[in-house]
Image 1: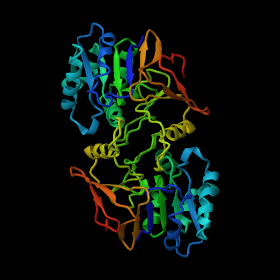
Image 2 (image 1 turned 60 degrees about the vertical axis):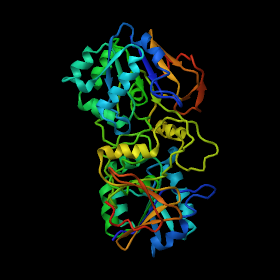
Image 3 (image 1 turned 135 degrees about the vertical axis):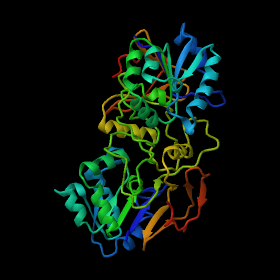
Image 4 (image 1 turned 60 degrees about the horizontal axis):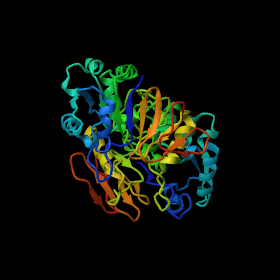
Length: 235
Length: 235
């Protein structure tokens, strides 16, 4: 039974870090005093220590202690013994490389599938899909694999952006990129706009937040889904 | 002696495919009747055949025949015997994967370093750098390596986009992504805006086109460089 919040972004425009997610932490991390933080994605190159203290400050507003995995001698043991896990955003290639290098990719998968509550934002959400192949990030490091946690049987594109009809830029739109992904891969992709998240609870996957999300299936036209939609059987 | 045009984009707003580059083809491909086209990046999932005929139509305006590498039985031989090479844009991960799979990455590097004129646009330009690690593309396929041609001793970010000061989107800006790249890698990165290209000629590398470009060096603030700037010693 998986309990998770998989959020498109950590931060909304004109809000503090994690502000809109803090009200949901007590339910996800019920009876959890201390959550393990995975800072490996290092947004903007921030250090593990700085990133941990930023996230810990936000979690303290929900009365939860956050401790960085970098503070533990044995990361595998830290994951196995964690009462809850939060993986922050940043660069997905770096995050995935580090999870493999520390040999905890499969350990996280195992403990979360066995009930350890999990929250991800951005890169931390991207890795909850079958693969990291619908990330928006730059390949700043070469990971040993693109396979990720597979907490859900599809892929996620966080920070989903609609094409700008007035744009004169000829770089590809997000929609074109996901279409190219589907030229070579078959799993559905959910484009989560900033403010949306997936809730995994009681064996159900539900779209949460105020916005619609955009669903991409191989060889089909993409379409909008309403908040509250049950995505449990999407694969 | 390398002769090359490395262009940010194939197409400018309100222009036809390759329109702004066609006037420069006769000089680059001097005395070349037939150029070899590498369509592997498949923008939007277009087939090799369709992509080749689109590019061939544009090249015909400069009186040059273009032939797709897919029409040759032996791609290694095709590259070795080519009088000129053009690599089109699309998905860089797919392009690099195919170049390794067909065992022509190093062959292209060798012939171009020995004088075969080369043109790249977008993904075809990205691979001229030391690595493909400053691409904007989605990792839709896992290549055996991120190393690329290294025709120049730095990296290129094609379709460079300035941050939008009015944006409410919290996904990372291009500048932040390149900064994250420099947290782990040391080579300079040139952000080429659409309409700019690098000209490699007479052992010199020069910024061409009407626009400025943005130069990123590890641990330095990024800065603008004027068109016409000599980048030969950038590394």
